[in-house]
Image 1: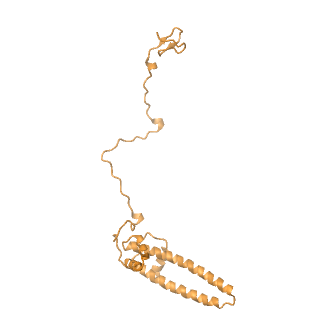
Image 2 (image 1 turned 30 degrees about the vertical axis):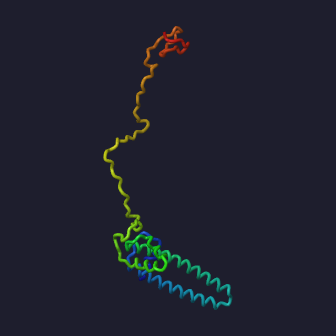
Length: 196
């Protein structure tokens, strides 16, 4: 029982693992015993504080003890929530079945029944909520039936130089205008007269 309670406190923030049935119920029994002990200590502190002559001193003592016990209760409550989620996963149910507890009249009984199920490697009910995040393998993409053209990664300085088509002016023969200017087009670049 003590080892189960220590395990619950050590794994207070582990909502992904699993906890077997005996470990869960021994931890629950330990939580009940710790709750009774805390209640007795709180009552003793209240009686001692009531015997003080000063009401302010009694209020301060009771207030400090209350704050300490509330912090302990919140910590144990989170650890209890985590162990319940782990137990549901171990029984093969999704983690969010913990919310069945809020169903009026039968919710708490239904949750106790679910927590009594034996450990299961395969999900009893699987809506995708009880699979472990670390064991999830995404589906592999299928290769295309026909391979696409290969992609060649070439740096800009290594890119092949594509020869440009020569312009019409470069392929035309050179002629000399009456003003003495050599030209390749239909008109003289210096005087603008047409080619003869």
